[in-house]
Length: 217
Length: 217
Image (cartoon, rainbow over all chains, first blue to last red; front, side):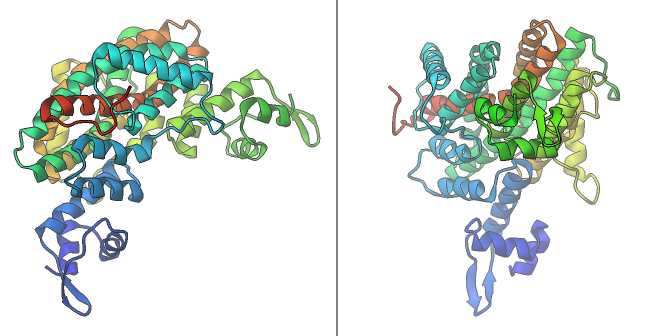
C-alpha cells in the first residue's frame, strides 16, 4: 500500500509516519518510484506498536527506537535487550561525585535480597541501578521504612514475571513472543501502576475510613 | 537560612530554587528585606521531596505541583488526591471520536474484575481510565492474551497496597503519613517496575535458558 493508505488504516498522520521513517522507528518501504514506496502489513503492525509505546507506555521517541532495535536483533537475549532499552526511561544515576553512603548501603540491601530470593540477574541490567537509586533516595529523605516493602515487592513480582514469561512463550513463534514481551512489559508497567492506585484507594477506604467522593456504579 | 545556604544544604542550585518558587512548587520564605527571604527546615525537606519526584519519580514539573498541592490540602482524601495528581502523568484518554468497541469491552472487563475482587473505587480516579486504556490497547494490537494477567495483577496489588497503607498509617502524624504516601507511591512505581525487570530476567533464565552476559557477583 502507499503511504496515504498506511495513514488511513493506522490512523497515524502522513507527517508522523515520515517522522518515524526519518528517526528509524519504522523501516523504509519498498521503493516503487523516485518519490514512492510500498508498505505492507508488517509496517501497519509496527506503526500500531510505535503508537502504543509512545501514547500508552509513555516512552520517548529515543527509548522507543532503542526498544525496537533490540527487538529486531535476534542476537540479544530478549529480557536483557528489553531491560537495556527500557532502562533509558527509568535509570537513576549514581550521584555525580560517586556513590555516597546511602547508595552503597542501598546496593548492599538489594544484593542481599536478590541472593535471599535466589535470583540470577545481571548487574548490567539498568533496573539494578534504578532499584538502588530509589532505595538510596528513600534513605536520603529519611523514609527508610518504605524500603521495608522491598521483600514483598520481590515476592509478588517473582510470581507476576513467571506468569508473564510463560504467557509470551506460549505464543510459539519468536516474533509474536518478542512483540508480547515489549507490549506486555512497557504497557504492563502502566497497567500495574493503575491497578496499584485502585488498590490503594480500596485499602485506604478499609484502613482509614476514607470515602470516594464519586463511588463507581 | 538564606537562599544560598538552602542551596548548599540541599544540593539544588539557586536558579532551580528560584524556578520552583516561581512555579509554586516551593512556598515562599519569610520576607526579611526587599530582596531577602528566610527559609527553614520545612523548605529543605520540601526541596528534597521535589527533587525526588522530578529526578527519581520522573514526574513533570506540572504533575509535581499538582501532587504537592493535593498533599497540602487537608480536605482532599489522601489516596484520591494522589490518584488525581499522579494521573496527569499516566492517563490514557478515550479515543478522540468517543469510546470504540475495544474501549467499551475493556471497561466492562475492568468493572467485572473490580466487582469480583470486592474493591470500592471511584470512577473519578484517573487510574480507572488508565487501566481501561491499556486493556483497550492490548485488544487493538491483537494482544488480548496479555489482559489475562489482570486478575493476577489485582491480587498482588491488593496485598501490596494493604502493606503500603498500613506502613504509612503507622507513622502516626498526618504530615509524615502524607509524605510517605507521596514518596512511596511515586517512587514505589519506579521501584516496582525495576524489580519486575529483574524478576523477568530471572524467570527468563529459568524458562528460556537465557544467560546473563554479565552475571552479578
